[in-house]
Length: 247
Image 1 (cartoon, rainbow, N blue to C red):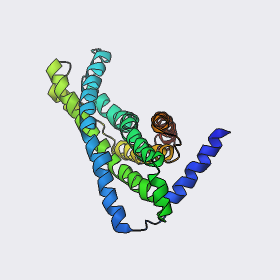
Image 2: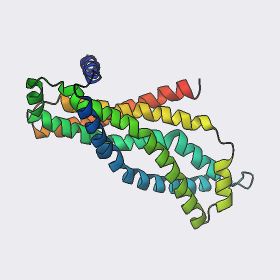
Image 3: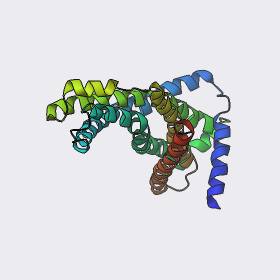
Image 4: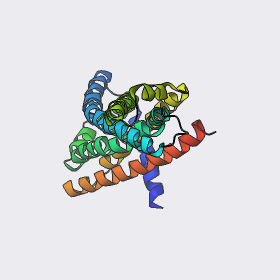
């Protein structure tokens, strides 16, 4: 029943996290710092991965749709819907859980083992809210923007690779992107991105805050944080897809 202990302590941490910040100006300053450190600094990897995935999806779909009975524009349609429904939200969240999540765990964990957090508590500061709240708000805020950016550059990657490799013409690819577009798909993926952003920030923060030991334990906590965050992302992906897309 060890998992029940962790679930209970996780929700206790969230209760302390969402208490009112003691100094709002300090919170806002820290929030913008976290948005830059955790969000803006992740733009590069999002763009690179999305460009390559968009190109790879286009080639694979062209290979699987080599049938004269199937219209060529389905390549663009398939790339678009795959990016919107799954890759740019779920797969991107799994990738960023490794980058952002391990960063959060190692930062908070290092402060824990060097007793900096204990110093904050002695000073009467709510260390959980002070350290974790700006990170959660920053990641939840920036995640939808990263998802939209991923969709755009994924489609751009297909637009570049498709005509360049000759698997689909520029006109057919663009026609496929525009064909039978469902705006709700974008709403669906943005809703998922908010949930995933919360998990990517809060779960690693939990493992970092309650780490005990030294540098070795901080490394182990980072690994556990990434693994468990990925499992929860996939679980929430299943639940949200059932509730929002197939219900």
